[in-house]
Length: 190
Image (cartoon, rainbow, N blue to C red):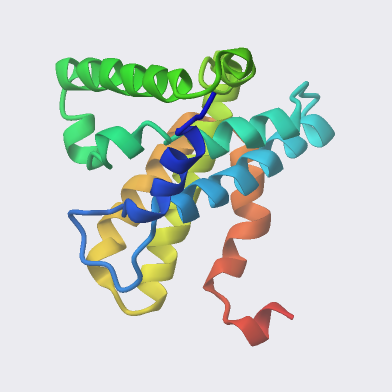
């Protein structure tokens, strides 16, 4: 059976985030998803090593890589619109679920069961990936500000608050130990 699943996933590189903001450097959905995967993996490791967690970091990473694949079909809905009120938020969740179901349906039937767990996450894993997603957004804000783009200043403050409001110790540890490095240039990272 021929499958369009991976050809659809490759379209992530053609979807750009932060559509309502002036960007100095565009960020594709592919780049964002890879970064969220790295960060989610780190959060799972921090949870396990320092906070008595019980996560499979590889599963968390894989699920994070797939966390926004529905946007291949829906596009990137700007956060202020997506979360404007409960009705819109609920409707968008239904649209995302339908898009995810469609993507899974593109797989050969014998492979579908192995991909469903990447979309149907338990609450603890969802929270870890959401934190990784927010940290990735914060990194984008920092990078834009470092290039002189103050368009992201208010988004940075809102994202910092959203991360703090999650009360996720592993996210706090990641920010404390790794975030400052994103303000350094290449020579300073050595």
